[in-house]
Amino acid sequence: MARPGSDKARERDARVQQIVTWLGRRGSRRNREGMARYGIVSAPGTVFGVPLSAVRALAKRHGRDHALAAALWKTGYLECRLLAAFVDEPAKVTAAQMERWTRVFDNWAVCDGLCLHLFAKTPFAWAKVAEWRTRNEEFVKRAAFALLAVLAVHEKAAPDQRFREALPWCEEAAADPRNFVRKAVSWALRSIGKRSEALRVEALTVAQRLSNGGDRSTLWVGRDVARELESAAVRRRLALKAAGGDRRGSGRSSATTPRA
Image (cartoon, rainbow, N blue to C red; front, side, top):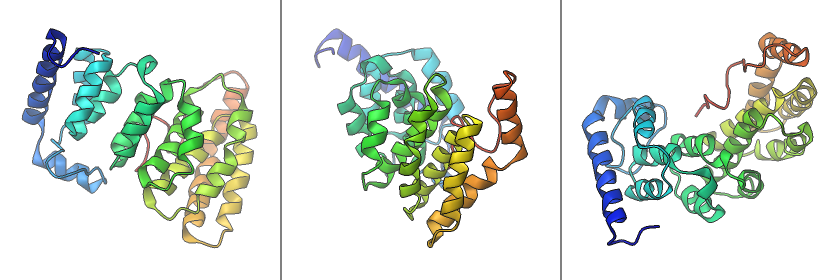
């Protein structure tokens, strides 16, 4: 990494300032209010109100740059942190960095964006799922199951057994009454169940047990998962997949469209 007073550091700082200025000009109160309605909130003064599509377009202009991602993260702006997920280089991300960034998550959009576009591409993804699932912090625990959901969709070559072993993690975490946690647990269970017919049956069995649970959270997760995994659309897609046909995702939710 460049020294603070080096030419590279000055150039990077100038780029960060240009990005902040660019975001500031394109943000709007209307977008901020819309984001807030969907639970995308952060510390006062740290949200510009810029659509994710614009953040993606900006990321393409800047390309991959690990040092730039770190500098963007330090600004504290929500859109800069979303941009860091697209700009950072997965091969240079460390487990310690993942821990530092996750500890300060304060909304589901940054949590899910980092898991989907960056963390799942690192060699530490599975270890972090196992570690974060036991944590008490709301968005750290959400990160565990958001990351598991992303891996279930994108790790095509991974054996079913790896995800089968994660089913008890989902069942245990379903009792967490916090909305952002239980929705991530549901997302993970549904994603695992859509990998194969065998996993669909096993995830559905978990969902049925949860549906008979004694608290509102497990009941909600169980019914949410069962509703999708019992759907004709999911059954049809898995049948086509088994026959070597269409492998595209279907159903209400996928790793690219997480629900808050």
